[in-house]
Image (cartoon, rainbow over the protein chains, first blue to last red):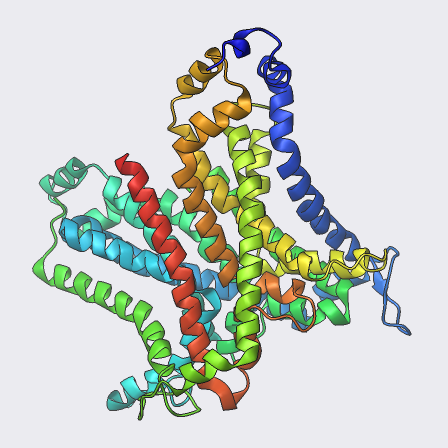
Length: 293
Length: 269
């Protein structure tokens, strides 16, 4: 190796950057921040601006201006209000079902299963996350179609599925996002110190009492962290409703249907899921759950 | 120990089995239906055949869609790898005002609903860029995908950088290496496995994405998920859709599998 490089000034750029950490930081951040802010944040901001524009009734082109009409439309047209409430109901139901399934699964994995079974289950729960979003919706469609698996499986019991409707949308969304709830809940249950269980049982608590009085309060932050995903991902979804919901419309359906016909209305309606998600994130942040994500 | 009665243990076991059944039955039904001889998917399958697989292999629109998917995912992976790594280095080496904001900015494109992200891009492209005489076309799709893939590379590289020994870089500088030389010979070899793992996850994420793609793909251009989306309503080719869906499952799982193997190899180092 040459000794030349030891001499001061032989690497002017490097030594300059080494002495100026601020310049180093700026040169690291400039490209990615230009991209994210310049491309994405500006797009979101332009969307907000478009929400105040209107559509020329003759040319059906977007026309710059300032009107609150689009927002008034969203909050007064009964169909839009009903869709917002329906979407909120679906997202909350998905979250509730995910919690109801994740807690027993987590208890089984952390406290009953042996290490091998536990690892197997952890992989088995994570794997479908990567199997493809649209693919899973199509798969649920195949299961619940008229001549599908569900009706065949349930035929001996004399049960027929409800067909494509809101309950199937809720099931499909649960299927899509369940791992996001299952994994943090399982991790949280595993982290509970074993002596808490001993103490609880020494004091005479039965299994259910321990779960209800000890486990549940300790895993609330994990449940909130998981629900950020199950809730906000369900809230913004519309393909599940389109393929497994029959005529069910969600907020996303209306945004998607309007983006070409009436971009300002689509833009205004986009603010609703953004607002829901931001409020939810703020509530979750107050409980301190976000640090666990 | 958590004391549960035998009955409760059995009940929990049944719940777990039901969950696994619920998670894997739809995928199994879909994959088996790709071998369904009939045009209409359903259950039970009467006759198995590979006829739709052979059809899909030589069907030009599917080949085009596969090529587009690979191109877009590769482009998004390359851009996201560079940007995600830069952010990871900035977040690791410095504590600065607005650090939390940078973190949120990286996560935001994936935290907001896909339809919002898609509509935002589409709105910018068609209501702002096109009137200004700039038609972004095919590249618009890659730009959108790159944006939400950054977080994948960032997460992986940042997690690795945090556990790395900073003294090695200082030693390298003391010995006279320039920043680039240090990066190439000292820093990069230490995090390249995480870098590759993050890049593969970015590829898988882009390959699988459909909602943002709907709004950003130029007319007449399909990715594989977009092709599925358009075909699924048409009853006459239902079984080909299942073939393509099975291919998407495989092509998203392979990068994830390799990525997991890389992550494990790194832990053993």
